Length: 475
Image (cartoon, rainbow, N blue to C red; front, side, top):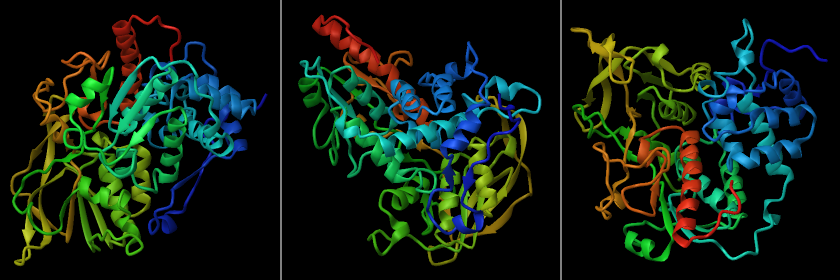
């Protein structure tokens, strides 16, 4: 038996000096042989904590042992039982905070956890290249019911795929001209190639799911029309409304929200101007405000668009940084600079309405706030200015009001998100379910998927009870 390595099997990546000027994927993925070498490291725990820490409860030891045995088809079949978006999750899921965090191998002294996410990506990519999803056999039995899904992001795609497997007619309504939600407009090509998103969406369509784009529910069609036509509805419109700090100078030319900046780049292909007709500002000195994955995406995109200096201003320290540690390391390799324990207090006007600097103040960490993290406190007389012609605020997003403003019957939380039972996705209106960022606020792709998976079961139960149809199968 091969000796179990203490460290993860190395994975190929684009070199920083090359990748910081292109939008090609940074991580190149495992070969099957490399994947098998990594799969050998798995302890095959009987009571695998990695499964319980996965929001969609993937049988992780099950697909890893199939890799070890060289049976990629079996590994893909295991993944397919639990997730509709494995190639996406293998790339963007924060495994280090979930399945890999509790890996028993990683808890042993001087051992790294199994590279679960990279192995998931390997299997999913193999399936996308070697399996024909267009030949999936759909049930010829009468459909149990008809379900509307509003929003084609990770939560909506998950609930749609699971319900289609349960023999429902499912129609997804997407407001934008391309499906995928945040997977398409929010996450850059270098981290999540759009061809991967497109292929996984096609695999869900192959289950019989219909996706209608350019449909703004609340405008193009009403919720009343949906309630009358469908047996149940799942709302997963995300939280894409930009938040701003509201400090002096916010209205200056050169101040962007991360939502606008990344949508221009990812959905509207402005990085490839003039081949695509969406221009974007060519910046010299860029400051990004925030410390999450969106801030990393914005900063690394700005670097690729040719900015000479890109800085991230974060009011806490590295220890509190919410972004994936892998993205942080990649950003440092790409020469992104950091101002820790720093907060902007004013954007400086050059006299012509254009930004030319960010006035900041240094911070220190005080007592813990409601999140459990130590609250940043300004240090008196510590102000300084960072030269900048572009600022990107990546401080979170608010709820999408287009649908909610036309559906006042739906109960909301005090923060303006949909109030839904976290165990079922049920809202204040019977037959209307909700999940993802429109319920939780901006969170991860995998948590949105987990909400969709839970809701699919509950929607099935609801419709069957409504029609008194016996349960015959489950996802």
